[in-house]
Amino acid sequence: MIHLLDCTLRDGGYINDWNFGHDNLVSIFERIVGAGVEMVEIGFLDERRPFDLDRSIMPNTNCVEKIYGNLKRRQTMVVGMIDFGTCGLENVQSCEKSFLDGIRVIFKKHLREPALQFCKALKEKGYKVFVQLVSVTSYSDEEMMSLIRLANEVEPYAVSMVDTYGLMHQDHLLHYFGILNTYLKPEIMLGYHGHNNFQMGYANCIAMLSNKTERDMMVDGSLYGMGKGAGNVPIELIAMYMNHTFGKRYHISQLLEAIDVNITQFHPPVRWGYNMFYYLAASNHCHPDYVTYLLNKKTLSVKSVNEVLAKLQGEKKLLYDKKYIEKLYAEYQKNEINDETSWKKIEAKLRGKKLLLIGPGVTVKSERKTINQYIQDNRPFVISINYIPDGIHLDYIFLSNSKRYTQLATKLSQEKYSIIATSNVTGTRDEVFEIVLNFSGLMDEEAEIIDNSLVMFLKALIRVGCKEVMLAGFDGYSSEESNYYNQNMEYDFVKQKAEYLNHYTRSFLQSIAEVLTVNFLTSSKYGKER
Image (cartoon, rainbow, N blue to C red; front, side, top):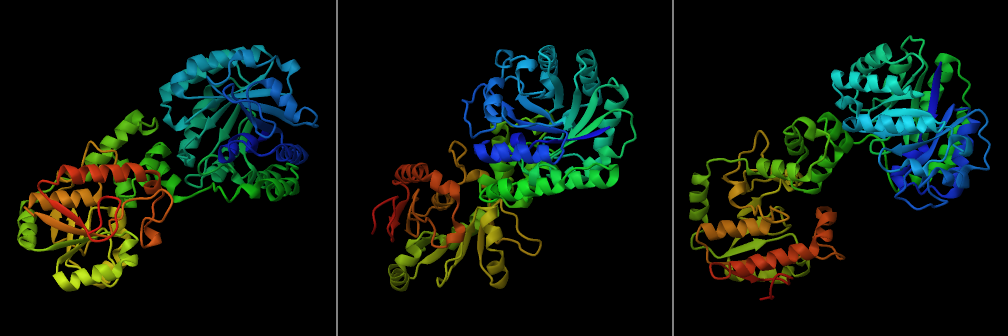
């Protein structure tokens, strides 16, 4: 027999911190029950969270009654979920006193032995216990057999494959299904919980349900696919398929009403479902936080992000380690080359020149007359940093940021610019940069942000013997106002790090004052206006 479980109120809660509002909690529950779905998961049991009538995350089983206790369940089984270690047995009353029929327990594979003992204790309290194998794709066949031996001793109600990071294709699913179906005791139900990083959740449900077996099976879904990360299998789709293929009688209209009335209000402002971010994580078989770390740097192209992720090794892939990814990022950015010839070129180009560096700050527009007058009176050698200012002739562009380089691609292809690039910036097949300097020689490995572009170029000027430079458009950073004259250049993390960036740059300027005189043509938080 096959069954359908709705996990909207639990997995969907990652989107809104489980704050659906009491009316929505009640309405969603009643719609799922009214649709004839066999099982409904009403949220998390988590002792770390205080009780809130509006949220589907509760510190103990007593609280479940306070939210859902007056509702009719009809034939629907009501279950909650515990992330192993977040809700002790003392917070779980006996099943006969509880509104819950069952409890699902999620755990990572290295915790499988104590987690199964916990499941055994829940079973002794009278609950139907669901064993949820987090990140099932991380299990080797030997580890899976170990889990099966433990499960057969406990005899839970169900064991579910949880594709936490949406990595599964059908061959993977059927491989694990084959092992579990062969060796699990026949009375244990077998389930699947999918995520849509590869848009495979729905297809995998179909593949799962197409297996011919005497064992009971179940698949999870959520309204509109609402769920963590790339989202879940849309329950309205899998219910429709099961009606058509297996003669089920789910009332799809009830599910659609719930989507329209209760779910779409959360989408937007917060989005879930397939997108490039979760594709990058899944295609590299890694924890999504690695992708977040690299994309938040705002220095790497997507190609470069993929190349860094490809360097992740072994167990580290799915167990996020910030220091590990920081090291890989720094190593990738170094991209060591022989830059001796480039240093000779840049020294020859800049020797004896009056230098003007142009940054992307708002003052490039607001104080344009001052900039134009200075250029007219002094005829300086003009270099911009990671962007192309409108209406100013440039002698060079300094590129140290792959993301910025990608944003400039159209202008760079239309006009010929001389470029000084750091070695972490990779040109297109047709573009060879005139001067390329090793990133590692200019970065600050001790800094929180190792690749401050202004600091890097000032280091280059010092190395080639420059004694003085004029800056325009290097305004410093604000946490409230726009930091760039072109709004499309704005990064959220810059506003969050404004105070740090200003302090770091001022400190650097003070440290080099004896070897390089830095003057400011336009207003700046870094120094005095000229």
